[in-house]
Length: 238
Image 1 (cartoon, rainbow, N blue to C red):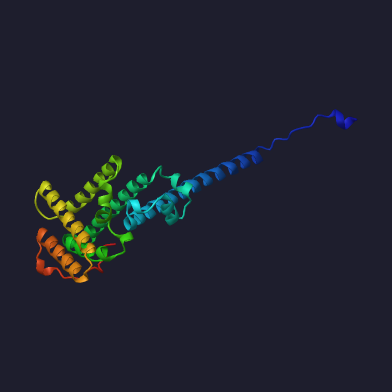
Image 2: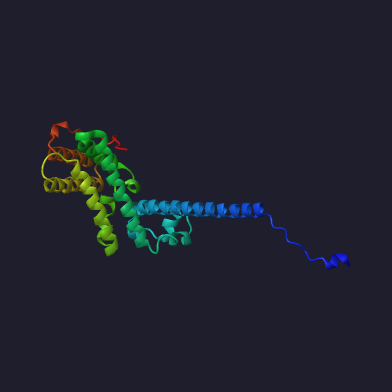
């Protein structure tokens, strides 16, 4: 009976409780970091897959299922990041233009005053002949943006202006306005040249177009057409 008369005693071990609380908090922090990192990684995969898919098939040629499959995520996983295919197009175009701007800046930093020739050779060589999935965003998806919603077009314009500013900043002489004007001309030359040379079935004609565009780019930036040679597509600014 004596045992029943004694009330149970709760022993409080402060160190043990503090350790447990710390353990639980750290575990939750690690899970949050993992979840955030995993979500960012998934989004990057989807954006990359969307860019490749839209370049290859066109906006109408691939659906959400195809984009999700290409990215290695579920249908629901896709919608966890983007509310629609149109939002994925916008993100893919923004990413592609940011990549182009980074490439321009990298070539400028590495090659100095001769960067235009190097970049034009790369663009009219390797970027002209690579698989469509890896092509530049400007010749491959600008037509899709023309049909896109206002938000996508506005984002495209913002990033395109940044690309042009990166190009113009590396051009010799002239006022800011004059360099910007030549920047637009240079971008238009390269993008138009890739578009035409990719469209024609005759490889020799495609090469003629590429060479002519490189010569025009050289002249535009104060160089000589004689310094341009065909077949320089192996140059990689990365």
